[in-house]
Length: 297
Image (cartoon, rainbow, N blue to C red; front, side):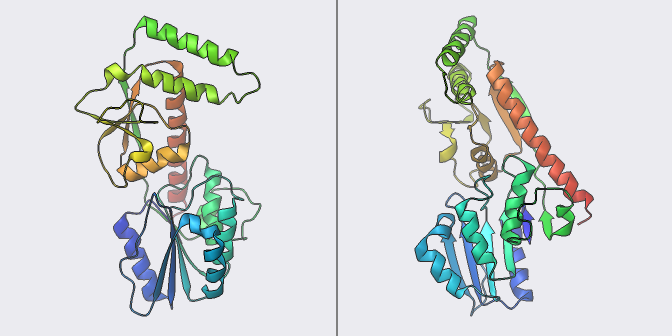
């Protein structure tokens, strides 16, 4: 079963129900450090083995697990969609484990990192080899055992007015970046310009609000970097600048439970670009939720 968007209580109940209806003697759990997961109710006589996501490829874990995983083993993959590379070594090793048991539970906050195609990685955890070389299509949402609790997001733009000289500095910075690009990666230009625009927002940071930024350069007590946001931290954060990796922002949303994304915007084109990218991600997410609902599951 693949479970999308469940609360911690719902995850625990799913596991409890599964153990009650299947002959399981061993539970193996994989979860990244960013999203640790503890199974709280394991009946006596069942062996519980928790591992970090990075342990999946470790020789000291891989071969011993292959020796003990059998048809009475339950594998739990918790927030293990960590890269968009479907052929990633960690995924391939996980498939070896899943080939040895019919009992697999997959828990993930969102059904994708960036694109719907990412969902195939979750299906590969559940059914390794079944859809090898097949791309994503919505019919799969009806074929496989998938439960989904949608999480809907809205965006609120907060104006961060900047002076004319700051706009001129931005244009100058952009020209410098393009002039110095050469054979470099053009994707680095919006990343650097977004950081530059973020610096121009310092005057709009209010001392009584909480903010999140790509790094710790502001040195302010109410501005936290994405990597320092703790799990289930809550808080009504305003975004100063977005991380350049989508998964970092997805992790932020999952940790905080925010549904209204408030963004501090200068109105510069680079801020509009990142807002547009976020809007497209929300549209893809909503489309997957709607496609799943239409399957009647």
